[in-house]
Length: 442
Image (cartoon, rainbow, N blue to C red):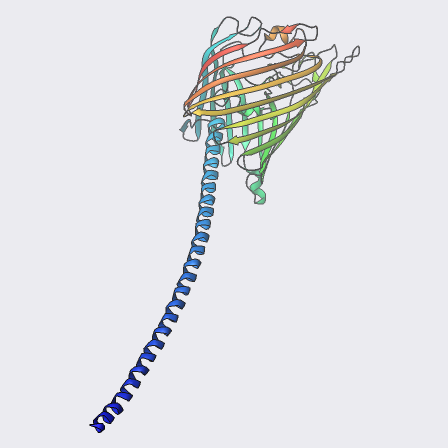
């Protein structure tokens, strides 16, 4: 019995030791697993923190990229709209092709009513403008162009008058391997002073009236023009006087304009001109129009002339444009009995904005200062204000609405206020203009 107990004790002792050892091992294993789980939990928390930080970085980058795309889309839209605006305002309709001959035209008809001292005091129905353009290829890069005026606002009749007519030799600069650097025209040409004359035709002008200065004219001569990078230039030598077929003084008119396109939105140019000495008896008037009239002799001299300089700027907006220009004129003649020298200053600011769809609004404010007095016709009667009392100062505010049915047909209406003062103290207060016009092109 004692031996059995001994054997039992002997047997139980290792068994208990084994159990204790196993329990200790299990306990150690549990402790090790707990440590590993805690380490894994810490690693998981670290990874989650890193993922959270990475997600924040990704969100920031996504917002930045979205902003860049939005800015690019906006710039693309702005450029597209600027191109559309520029095309709407300055391009001619497509016209018709007959082999090498291209025919196009434009016109405007409406009703005009001015104050009692204006050019239309009786509410006139008027053919405001009717023009035909013929452009034909003569040979390779040589073209012929003719402008036929059936009616214009400045002519008192409805008869055929010749506008521009010239031979255009393009890409002369191909001789030295460059395109567009030098081109030449000879014949009867627009006088390239300032930039308002470029959009003066009824289909291009967003309003009905023009600025007070309203420089434009055609004259016989030679012109060169071209492009050098972002710069464009034009220079012309012309007769200077109004007679169409004769020049009564050997001194020529010289005009030049240099323009710079900073980007598709902003355009800037500087122009200069000298009319040259004009014969007071035979030339009588300059070929260059100014303020609804011409440069004419003020005194009793035999020769007269004017020198001009102007700066123009244009900013294309997403739904319209802003234009401004300003300049200076110095006039003189050789009157032996009096000093008729005059310094004249002028400026104009124009804005056009699309209101809704094809409906737009436009406004233009312009002003002329002429100390000592100068012939300024403006909206007044030419017989009175070109050869009558001289004007000291004058301003014009034009407000208009237009609806572009398409590039070929536009309806416009406008009210223009005009106020000024003569050197004798008289006021110019009865020249306001109300007009409604339909303009077309083909």
